[in-house]
Image 1 (tube, rainbow, N blue to C red):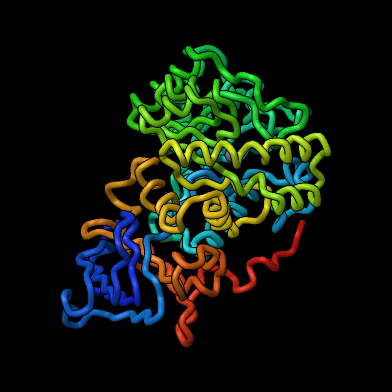
Image 2: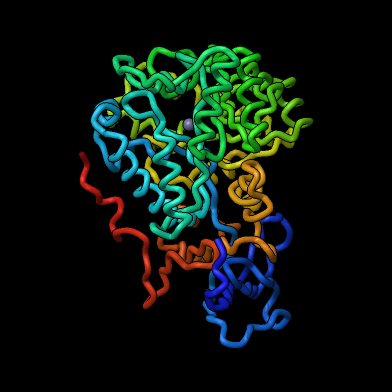
Length: 442
Ligand SMILES: [Zn+2]
């Protein structure tokens, strides 16, 4: 979005992490004009333009806005519902969209300036693509404050993991799923016609559903090839849900751009991921003990809880194998029902616990996420010419990655040069109600 008329701003910070993984810049200064970064450098080397608004973030670390590229903003989480099955049947698509807006705004307040939203099925098996595109466009137009939204459309077979999220008794919309390469191409085209930014598909079973084994195959190779080819033909990327090594190999063969979840793996799949330079999106938070606790509270069956606990044990080993092999990792949480929207940066703490450096963990949620979803040219790192998507953190997240989870430490959230959140004393500016987590449950 062009903002040529806006005044020039200068952000000052004690240190700056640009997202490229190099040394931290001390006493940093960022000049912002027209929504984009104009110059970056140490104080003294870069001059403050005349008349510029100076935002002096003294003890803060400046870094790129965070990104979560696998979450479900239109799911009902414990903020809004006591029981997820009831929620699936009670929430109409319009209510789902209002929830989505709340979730987006919570995420912006937590320092996330870009989200790749994986739609969540409504009670008819549909994915509200048109409505989500409208929300994206409303945010883009400045009607509502929110993170930049990258919206997905689903193209999967009947009975896929993504289809099984919908309660069995629900009647399905005719376009909820499709079968056979040409029908799936048609479905992908229809989804893309609504204006979505990417196609989400599915190559294996998954975790959060009742009575489903995670290692069943979803789609044939021919079907998967058709979906990815169709997305690419229309210049969009494709995300593929994969739990098993077999699913990863199918998705890589088909040319999918992000390989999501990856609970299990094997040497051959790892070799393919490395040689094809694919991004995997780990989504570990969704299987953490805290997530399981929340899941239990909202009425998830014992079968599913046991399955999720079993999967949790494999995710650590798989993640560490990827890390050792040099597989590219881009941050995604699968935040939907659990543990709670806004806690997404806990995912980075898990990466650090499992052996990543804090700098690498930050890169998974900035540079890597941007590259994974084809936005690397405009955001993800702090460089002249890119959008001024910048957050200021009180303290040094390289010393304590958990600072990114504490909203009071997230002092400034700037998206495209506009300050949406300001928690400096005397400047308090928020996007939503100050007590977002105090919402009345339905
Ligand atoms: Zn998901």
